[in-house]
Length: 99
Length: 467
Image (cartoon, rainbow over all chains, first blue to last red; front, side):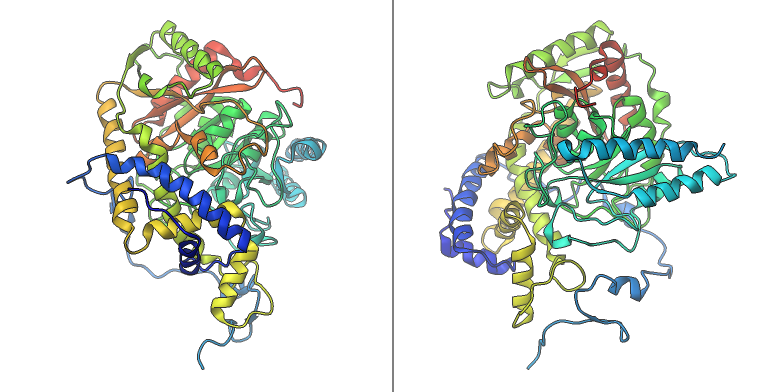
């Protein structure tokens, strides 16, 4: 059975995704996402009992390497494109988070 | 001999400047940087590299120091990377000169370049039509001979489909063949960088340069890199080509179907064996792909939050407000839709029904290919079910846009290499592409087949009026 998204569901997803939507986007996305969800319903018809999930096309063994220290991005480079930063202290600046 | 590289780069820059108003293939032309590189190469005493003096463009989601990278998004307007992508390092070490970045759909999400926040690229064969996407600017730039080589990235067909729609060669390597370090991530288990060229031979030469293990990409494989051009013998007498005819349904444009059938006859006449194969789950590929790709995208694009780089909304009241409003302003509609879909399919209560199910289907799709490769060496399919469609035609119907990827997503889901080569034209004179898909790490057989076909037909030699 197809899930159907109501505009209030779209609001909930937008909050999870850290997006604000205009009233038009809210209605348009509800319609378009429902189109896509109806389309993907087809995969539910396939019996996948006991089938392993593939999260990645390759075995993960390529990732192992020696744990050696190396130089990383210089602090000034990392801060170069920050919209707001305290460059002397080497910090990104954001609105007050606590109290 | 001083000045040769500079002259070559100046020629490319002049062609780009002349074509740009109509074609919009480039996002940023890095003329000063390219000429400085050319002068260094012209002055150098070192022996020339394999790509010495080759002018080359990179898709606008691959970073290079000194060149702005936007990924087609307002959220990265003005962004300049503090480091080079691995492919940029390798190309420049081989003597190539990067002349600029090419237009793409925002964060590579699209099949037409309509989703580029700065406007679409146009198809050199018909300027009212799409060059395909998401690497449409790269395909258009090569088709119009602005540069001999351009790089793209392919998550669900974003190299092969635009190559098909622009009448050039496009290669999506085996997953893990080319380092993704410095490629802005869309769907990390699917993304691969690959070349566009006018011929399979040129694409093979560039593929060799950009391939190979890179410790900075944890998914980069420790596989030996063959000299791909040595595989291009023109001899396909021992190649078995599998054709999943059950996938070529009534939805395929009749021009595409006719060109595909004719291409198989050519392959047969060259001595290749053509036989039917079954890919029983492949017709579910689009659904599986759009669940997995959006899920991964929703996580990857969380980094665009207005804190470390990119657009930040002004007048915000809290950190959450900063995130939400920066992302609202910076992302376009398709990116928001995909983040929303990905967030939904990963959310509590829906994860098993959508994301886990799609991952299980991914296993079945990969198994289908593995089974086919027990009896054949390459699988042949049309690259795209249709030729270039008018720009803007599918913007309001995302699902219809997604269906353009029906023949290409399988290779991404299974991690396989794929190539698109020109195989004819529609009655309207629009290019059609033929796709070969091969076993993991067997680009050599795939490119040998593509090259032999190309040598026998020379479709790629026909030039658009804009070239």
